[in-house]
Length: 218
Image (cartoon, rainbow, N blue to C red):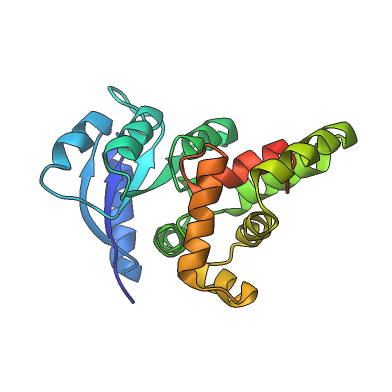
């Protein structure tokens, strides 16, 4: 199994030590460094560049939301998984809209954290059960009037194929799985996803999913 280089950004040393200790037990990823806030992280990125950052939201000096925006602008190749100690769905969704690729609770077990790392590297996003449940709730509470209005807009914004791909992403399928299901190449799926992100004025594909669900498209 390939190990991905990960940095942990959190202002609680005990939490960082705990992640490192648990990681040694399952060998899920390779922790190459840590930082106590976003500003500290930026300094360290000059010397070591991770593939994934596990990023706390609430930190002094430079919090997770500001750090997410900075990383998306200057280090877009780095995948970001937001960590939160509370059920802050609104804040987490804002981070996802600003460029994060997934989020999970701090009390998640190490296997779940490893899964999130793998998913953001393989799929480009991590869709956990909490976020998925919230998206389902938005769909259920959409009014008929809003659905009719959005339906008219939807046709001019996303193609039928792009809508189909968004729905498959909601089923947590990888690029390869989607390609196999639609009898297309992985490159074609990646191109469609890039178009979806652009058309919805999002920063990541998971941000586009959240936008689409909020609009009542899926």
